[in-house]
Image (cartoon, rainbow, N blue to C red; front, side, top):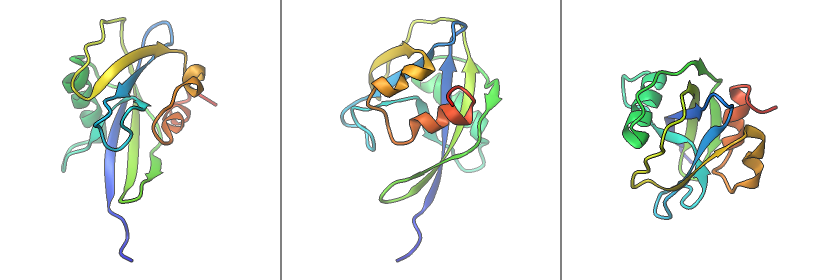
Length: 135
């Protein structure tokens, strides 16, 4: 069996000044993880730095123009068809009205430790551990 392809994913973890982070509920048609909670994520394009991809996705999905303040270690997610290397980045932002796009149906500002009360995509909690927001 040939090895699974590896895809690099950038994750933008958005945190307000009060310490709450933004969760987004994926649309039911989104694959993988339809109907589950996640962060702003997207594929890293060829030749693109993961931090630039995270900032680009944040602008595309929420209309927020910001730069990451802290990178986390890579989180490896094994899916059936591929392996994902998730590059989490922390974005510190002032409070803003969340504008959802077609990829998401709901949003919630939560304390990082409250993540376990949500049905989230595989290994999302590891992104917060990688950034030091969860232990």
